[in-house]
Every structure is written in C-alpha cells, then in structure tokens.
Image 1 (cartoon, rainbow over the protein chains, first blue to last red):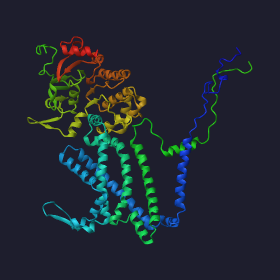
Image 2: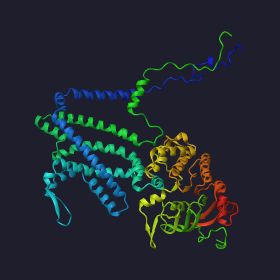
Image 3: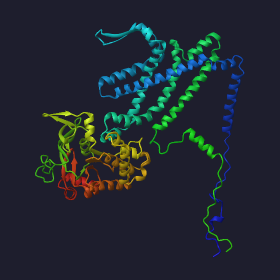
Image 4: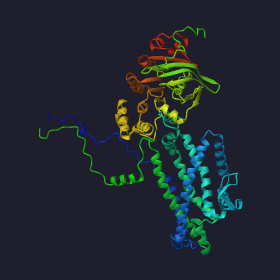
Length: 328
Length: 271
C-alpha cells in the first residue's frame, strides 16, 4: 500500500472551496460625498475660530490654571460630591416612604417630590439664599412647646454655600427618589418571596436581594444626574457661591475677556464630566453581574488584548489527517 | 351537582386531623376581596410523606401552599407545622400577629420551590445556596460552602457552582433552587408547580431530584400537573376544585378509581 490513505489534504487551501464568492464590491458614492461635506464644514468652523482676531488664545492658556479658577474647580467638585451623596441617602428614604403602606408617609413623600420637581431650580436656589427673610433665627427645641435648647441667627448659619448645598441637595433628592423607586419597582416580586421563604427578614431581604438588583436599574440614570449636578452648581453664581463659573465671571468682569474665560470654564466642565463617567462604567459592570451571560471586557482589558494581538502569531500547523511513510 | 356530598369515604372529614401529623391544616379559609379561594380546607401531612395537590388552575392549590409558609395570610382556621401555629402567637384565648422576625424564623424551617425558580440573579449558583445559611442561620462560611457544594453535587450540578442563573437552563436553575431550599435543612418542602415553566425534555431531571428527596424521607407538599409523579411518589393525592377538597386519599384511589365526577373530568383532561 503506497497510495495515501486519503486525498483530501492535497486539495484546496483550508477553508476555501471552489464556490467561494469573489464579487466586485458595490460602490457607495454617498458615503464619500457626505463625509467630504462634513469634513469641509468642520474645517471651516475650526479655521474661523482659530483665526478670529477677537479671540485671545494667550488669555485662555493664562487662566486655565489660575489659582482662582482652580479653587473654583475645587469648590464645584466639593458641592457636587456633598449634594450628590446626601441627596442619594435622602432619596432612598423618600422612595421607601413612597413605597410604604403608611398613607401619611406615602402622601408626604409624594408632596415633596411634587413641590421640588414642580418649581425651577433657580428659584429654589434664590429662595434658600433669602431664608433669613423668612426666619430671622433658627432654633433647636421641642415644637409647639416653646422649649428651646439652642438658637442661631439665620444669616450666620446659612452662608451662601450652605444655602446652595441645601438647594441642590433637596432638589436632587426629589429627582433621585423617583429613580430609586423605579429601581425598586423593577425587581420581580418573586425575589422577595424567595428570600422570605428562606427565612430572610424584610430588612435583610432589602439589603442583600432587592437593593443589589435595583442598583442595576438605578445606576445609569444616577450617572446622568451626577453630571447634571456638576453643571448645575454653576447656578449657584446667583447667590455668590465662589464656584468655578462665579470665579470666572469675577475675573472676566475685571479683564473683559468674557469669551476666553467661558472657554476656560467649558474646558474644565468637560474634563470633570469626562472623569465622572469612568466610575459609572465600572459600577454598571459590578451590578450587571448575572444579567448577561458574559460581561464585556473593560477598556483596560481591551487595550491589553489589543497589545497582545498586535503581532500575529506563527501560522498554525497544517491539518494532518494523512500518515505517509517516506521512502516506502 | 348531582352527587351526594356526604357519606363519601374518599372525601376527607375536616374534623379528623391526625394530631401527630407534621403539617395540620384545619378548616382554613381565605378570600381575595369578594372571591373566596379557600373554603374550609382541612388536610394533614404526616412526617416523611409526600402529598400532591392536584386541580384545575384557580382551584386554590397554590394559595393553600403559600399559606403554609405565611406568604399569604389566612382569614380563618389554623395551620400547624411541627407543633407551631403558623403566623400567629397564642396568648390566652387570643391570636396575636407575629413580628416579621418571628415569621422569618418559622419560614426558615420550611423550604419552598417556585414555578419561576426565583433564583437571585446577581449571585452564582453557589452563592444562591450559601446566602441563607450564612446570612440567616449564621453558619460559618467555609462549612456552608462545603455544604452548598455537596448539595450541588446531589442535584447533579457539581460543575456549575460558579455559574450565574442566566447561564443555566431552566431545569438546572430549578435544581439549584431545590438545593438552595435544602441548604436550610427544612423539615418540610413546598413545591409550587416546579416543572410547569420547563421545556418538556428538562422536566425529568427535576422530577428525579424530587423523587430522590421523597425516597430519603423528606416531607413534601407538591402542587403539580405531573400525574405520573403523583402516582409513583405520592402517599396522598388531594384533588381540589373551587377552593374545596373534592377528593383525597392514596393515588390508587384518587387517580385510578376516582369517586367524583369532577375528579374524573380533570384526570381525563390532563391525560
């Protein structure tokens, strides 16, 4: 027996057969034309900005890292973080009240959301700034009894910063509570029953079973709210809180470089909102466990994979289905 | 109704409840609004036996099962499991509602398996099984993990410990759910149509696990439409319709020689 055991290996290259399609690709002229038009418009826009004699690029560079701007950035971040954290905790309470079977708690919660969502945030901010006109002193005591432990002049306690924090926090809590409520409602009732049937208490069930599943629904819109909050801090300029936008306005009112400072401010807001999107991505991954069969790789893992794939490996060995004894 | 209601040996007499039975359901009534789902149901399930509840949908069998671990409250009568009155504490001649914590403690002794599995989707199979032993029964993590692995092996899923429910088939999910319920070492297992949401070819695996459990002496109450399972495994078959027990007894009587027309009609329709 000198003939090969089978002849398949001598045929065509692997994966190719005689009826492979080798068609002329369809021409898509509109792709080229539309791309060209958009590029022209973009170039025109860049050139108009870059060559505009009224725009002083030196000033932009000069003020980008000005100490006053940096302190404004710091305060903006501080206000964002504090308002967001406190408002989220408050939102969980308001959502729990709304979902409770106690009609008083549920109606008060409904009323809170109605009032704070129904009035403009700007109006609320100014209103908190004028709190001193409503109550000249703030007192700590037992209501309706006249017993008083401690009191303070309103304008001493409620500085513009505190008023701003209050306004942003209370307004945000109304919006966030609706997001939290939607998240809680989205969890299947069977989950609660399964947890109860295993002997879990209502609190334990909420903490270990319901909340982690609600988080999956809560996090994407909360990321949105976080970014809105960062930008809404600029509204506090109306009550003279020295955050980023207020600082820029103060500078531009003395050097009259309004547009340049607005560009500085915009660059900082863009930078900060970009940074804030990163934790959201990882939180979504964390709470998305079990919802998809396989989690997509993180950007970092993707980068690693891309580096590893850069060099093509050695050609795979050809398939050997034939045993041939040489020289026989 | 032309048949006589009385003097029928197959109809269980509500007053005759075995006081030693693990589960005693005495004259239980339950309404949803104006609709009465359970009308004076009485039933006893001795320890180590399997009771299958049969009946058309809306007959109240699932509701009765959910009453046994107080997922539904009853309007009248009483349910006693292992000597404990379910959901209420008796002081003097009055019943007091239990606190959620006391109810949770009672439920920990009663395992339940649901039609839609209800596994926790954010936990792996192993974590699903370990959650209650560690978090509720306060057992050690390493011991619970070993126990969870043993249980997974017992339901034939030793290689799936790290899988999330979404990565498992319906039959596999239901077997994990059974293992999860067993992890609390319940005295009683309730099965609420455990195979109704499964593809036909996956039903067998789940029934095998249940059959094995029955052979090991677990007390079980099973709501199902699997007549074959009832015939092979049940010690007692209870046919319910319209919120009443129509007929109850060993499978040889209820399934093979039903006395009542309603039972016969139902059995013909599911064959």
